[in-house]
Amino acid sequence: MSKKEESLLGKIKHMTGEQMDILNSDFINQKLESLNRRVEQLQCKDNHEEIAKALLKKVSKLERRIDVVIAFQEELFSKMFISSDGSHTGLHGKPEVSKYK
Picture (cartoon, rainbow, N blue to C red):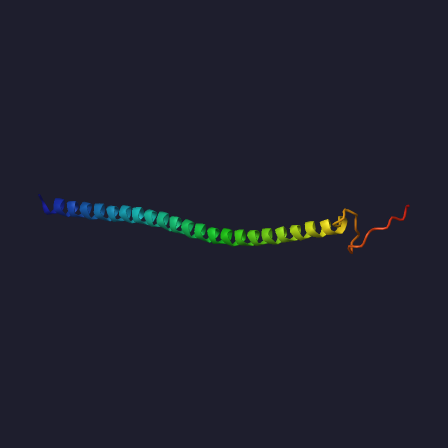
């Protein structure tokens, strides 16, 4: 093989190597981008889970408060309108006097 052919073959090998490096670099960059997206999605998911947990705690607390209020209202209404002897009472537990007798 002549020096010219060897030189040409060397240049071809060098250019081929550069192309392979570029392709490998692009492939690695694509994989890195894909991995970064997946990590961001996981972090976002974790963040959303924490937000959801906090909201569920608040909802649970509100439900307990509402249940307490409902129980209090039911007790208050039962005391307001029905006494132990079955007669109706007013707001302050006193028997109601009808104006229309």
